[in-house]
Length: 540
Ligand SMILES: CCCCCCCCCCCCC/C=C/[C@@H](O)[C@H](COP(=O)(O)O)NC(=O)CCCCCCCCCCCCCCC
Ligand SMILES: Nc1ncnc2c1ncn2[C@@H]1O[C@H](COP(=O)(O)OP(=O)(O)O)[C@@H](O)[C@H]1O
Ligand SMILES: [Ca+2]
Image (cartoon, rainbow, N blue to C red; front, side):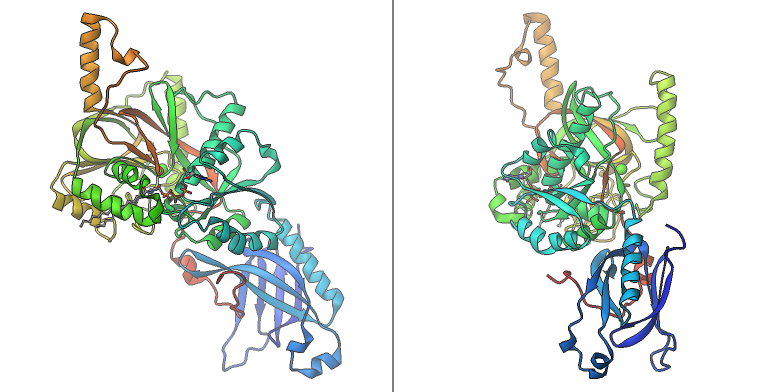
């Protein structure tokens, strides 16, 4: 595309004449001679924010200006574009331009279409999975009423699968031809995203011959992007990567072809792969809240408040050993206040440095003097590994406000045993501006890998070893073993995971989302107030 796309014409919009210019950068319209009372009016939409163009039939009856009808037939086209309504919240707006010259009108439509087609990162074919039972069970309605009309406006073809059971999306992804799609969309909550992500990562590894059970195997990054239409109970992954849980905003990020790389952490027990997570892996408090809330699914998202209150009162602590490998490749740290923003420099540089470090480690067969494992043994109310901020409507800054989406690190938060009052103070700080790490009983580290073993398992291992020595085989060798551990469970992106021992490793930028991270506030100040403020589907 070159200078061929450069048009400058006088067109009418809302009965006023505007000088309208289209070039590679975008569309601009301004008043040739601004009426002094109004001041100069000029509006622009960058190419990357133009959604679609359509030829428009002008309803002549609507016009009370008979003189135009007398003159000649009007020819019109409507430009649909993204507009920032308030921080992080996007809407689709429209502006209908017209003129009496049919050829000129067609020329504009053609040029705008060419410009839109030049945006090669935009998806054309999407595979959509809808969980009809997420959150308030509105997934299907949200998709059909708010999202599908926008996809069809943007000429995106879709194949829609309404899931019938848990893991449906994951299983389906193991057999579909991924080459047929430019992206996968999941409509639901964090659990639904987890299903899709496991399907996609598993499929990519299988196709590349990587064994997911091998905790040392470097994983192959997934090419297909995932879009999240939030319709769940917490919607943490959407909120922390877009800044809001709003279906229309997410649909627009997908249509405009945004791309946000995301770290994924793997959880293994010895040589068995258990799960991946992108937001929170939590033991103790968040594990117990999740486990308790699962029996209360019928309550919807309030289940978490009930379970949270109950778990808070029970005030269980868990003994165990955490060992971790601190991240040495990143300049960021959990309390530096440098939160992850669109086109984050910390993420970019960290990835580069991690690649160098990994190459260095490979050359030295894993050895690097900076690789010092730290070991902390204790009694914990909560052990949280936050791969991202984990911001959500309940906690707008999240569990670790300065965690990054794509730096190859997770923030490991250890909440040691403390009084109920202090734990409540800690929880309350998730909802306000105060630093939740500024407590003597809270430690936070930026890490690349960590291991956890519960005290019960350590004790039983000691007994096993002793008994093995003296009596031969013992129960852990038997599949029928009935040893029970009174440990907690893991909350792994909102899915429960029972394992008294795990090894976790962060995989830098393993997947990509249709998102752009958190836009800094200046973006909203820059956003022009447009002439026509009619929302297309935004208010549905
Ligand atoms: C006193 C107020 C305390 C508010 C503390 C809020 C902390 C919220 C942090 C949320 C981190 C979320 C991490 C993400 C988790 C999700 O993946 C996951 C699944 O999402 P999905 O259902 O959409 O699939 N969601 C969850 O695990 C839910 C976590 C929600 C925890 C809520 C805890 C409420 C605690 C209330 C304590 C009340 C104490 C009152 C004492 C007088
Ligand atoms: N049709 C279905 N029936 C039952 N469970 C389902 C279905 N589709 C998906 N699931 C499972 O429901 C779980 C929760 O889904 P999610 O969309 O996160 O809702 P919520 O945010 O309300 O927890 C996920 O683990 C997913 O595998
Ligand atoms: Ca990270």
